[in-house]
Length: 140
Image (cartoon, rainbow, N blue to C red):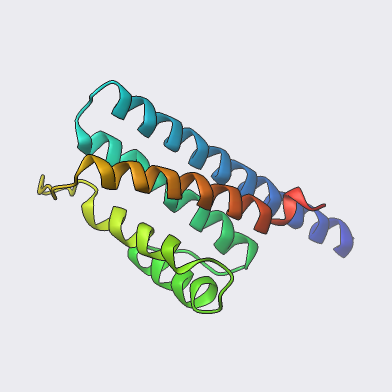
């Protein structure tokens, strides 16, 4: 009976990782499409943020690290996976940057140049791929 419950919990964990990484890919595709259509950069940045944040959630789930508010989750990701060398520092820098520049509820906007957005898009693509390799659902 315990094995069945543990098995079900493991399957649920794997499914959550799959969902988060699929959400990341969708957010990245939407960010790229919005940019290509010349839409407001705020929409692009919001989607770009989630292209980085969803893999963080999948990785945290894989590492069984609890998630909470976005800023705390990102800080825990830094401690558990960046400082240990599991993931590249440039990913943490990008996560922090898009968290800083994405539109705020207050309507405050940060200026971002197109070159930086393109660089962040490329990093998001790499981060999602590395997160997929890290998560167990692909290695089982």
